[in-house]
Amino acid sequence: METLIVLVFVVGYLAITLEHNLKIDKLIPALVMMAISWALIALGIDNFTQWFDSGKHALLDNFGLLEHEDKMHMMEETLLHHLGKTAEILVFLLGAMTIVEIIDYFDGFSTIKGFIKTKSKKRLLWIFAFLAFFLSAIIDNLTATIVLISILQKLIQDKDVRIWYAGLIIIAANAGGAWSPIGDVTTTMLWIAKKVSTGHLFVYLFVPSLLCMLVPTFIASFLPAFKGNLENEDEKEDKPKSKFSSTMLYLGLGGIVSVPIFKTVTHLPPYVGMMLALGVVAIFAEIYSNSKFALSHADAEGADYQGHHSPVHHSLSRIEMPSILFFLGILMAVAALESLGILFGFATTLQDKMPMMGTELHHEGVSDLVVLLLGVGSAIIDNVPLVAASLGMFSEPIDNELWHFIAYSAGTGGSMLIIGSAAGVVAMGMEKIDFFWYLKKISWLALVGFLVGAIAFMFTRTIF
Image 1 (cartoon, rainbow, N blue to C red):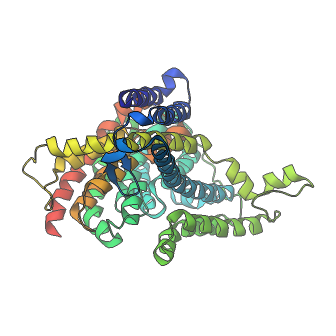
Image 2: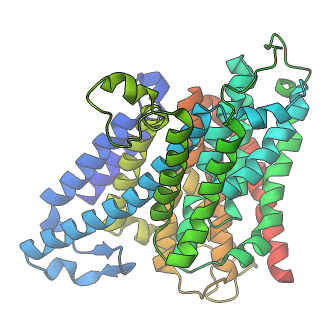
Image 3: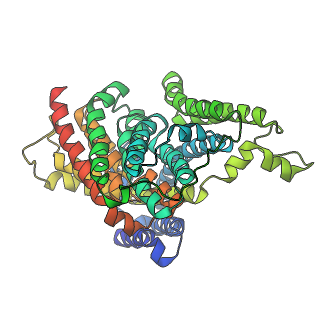
């Protein structure tokens, strides 16, 4: 039965990667493989001898001895646990994406666009790379990618030129997200689990992450795609559509930045802070737009008009729901593999079989190669469950260098494939980037940056 579930995952994964060839949206195979995987678990529950308790991050070896009803209860509890953890991420992303759309409703990004005056492709590349790197650390790599591609679509009309910039934005955003506790989902997971602290994360990972962004950008700046100037672009100066554009930009970004502060003070999950930030931003958005004050519904009289006039209604209607459903499908499908102990067993085998290569982490002799392969694995599967599995595998204390290396590898390794990171998935959806185009043109740049940053980390960890 385990083999059949793995086969379902492999077939579903191939369908996701071949989205453009099959002409089937990637969310469909993601949702189908999630549903089939859990259905197979439910039907074959009596045949499984082990179970991974995600709450305790440990394998239950006596699972096979339990009664059928107890096994079903354990499966339902695990399913609910994973749905809860997935929902935390999705609600957080929904909040962040809605705030971004509210900012866009007031044309807030024209403030950033106004700072970009150059027509040089190379200079524009460097501007977007640094913007992605620092913005992702402040508002997370997913939101930063949405923001910057939104600006890119206003600046560059030619899609063939634009997707090159989008590819480098993915690398820079993932690199920037690795050294901030709210920059990447996996870094946030490690931060919430009290494995890393904000100060040490910056000290250990800022330089490796910066190199991970700088090296690919430097190499790319010599490629033909970034030579010369932008042509046939709209020369006219676009004035902001609203006098509140800059106010809403700073208010929206400020709201997102306040989330880790809210978490530190209240110890509540980040999505609660994000909902508060969304509520505050929405209050000002509704007041500034002079529309009826309503989040959930418009009044019956002229409901359609009012609903569309409300910036919140408008912003919610523009949310990339296929991406949200794709996250739901892929995360819950991988949760099925994790629940059966398949991921945990794979990670443990990897740890046992890999040579130490002469360089070891100081505590339990975990090979650097294992952590590097975790980074490669995060591009192929998904970094969230791999980091979740590592939380159960290793028992190092807070701020041990192992956790920082995992944060780096899982955060930046996903850039090697376009579906390997949240930023990549969103860029793929927004720009309809082909999986194989990214594999041929961008993946090698991401790999070079990943390896340079990893080598830099191996040096910086010996200093601190």
